[in-house]
Image 1 (cartoon, one colour):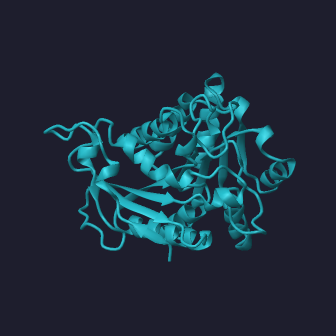
Image 2 (cartoon, rainbow, N blue to C red):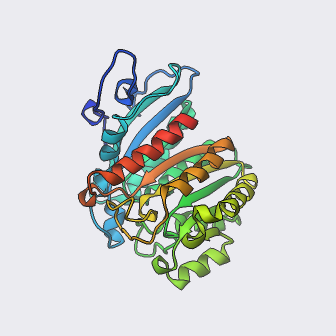
Length: 318
């Protein structure tokens, strides 16, 4: 069993009012072991995946374990436009115990399935991108067997690396693809922002052989907005549910310097917000996460603020 820590009010700071004008006033706290009794009202569940073991295994920069709390500290300062009936609950953090990443992924899977069963919309804060495997498996447990989940990955990397030497931040979608392959199914996957200077030819070949959809970074921009929207709509129409994962290292380091693998050659927030709008309007979103924030390398908390702003947009559009 991985370590589990309850959420802390210390991570939700900011201005206060008498009208819950800020999210630090709106937030509630609960345990995945003994949750708050949930009404039929919409509940947004925040859960942290406080681990960078997958980044370490993938030879990246350590520090993403600090990401979930750094996002909370920026999100709490932001205005609250949620209605009174909508609950926003912090369920704390799952942490890697004894470098056992595989157990952590399993525990996240169980936690996500539990949150969905209790009428929560899971928003997972990372942490390294290996959380995607646990998150997806948890979503899969919740849906009927004859339904499909489409994965939309905002990322510079496919994360299709083989896991022959263990799971890592580079393997989650390879794991998902091979799980489906074992059942004679195909992965429903779209990556937005892929860069040729960040993926080997073997990864492109794997994507092609598994009929993965992707847009290279040079086309994932506002100049090609109509094309991006068309590709997204076509993908969305072909699945029953959507799992969306936002890897902050896909953004240019001009916007996101504090990540596990930074590059100036990434995408910008405007095209991501346009894409998220389409995803949310589909009504098919089942779970979302933001990953790879590394506060050790952040500048003026810019990357944490970017992550918080993206989540602020999502939770108010759900």
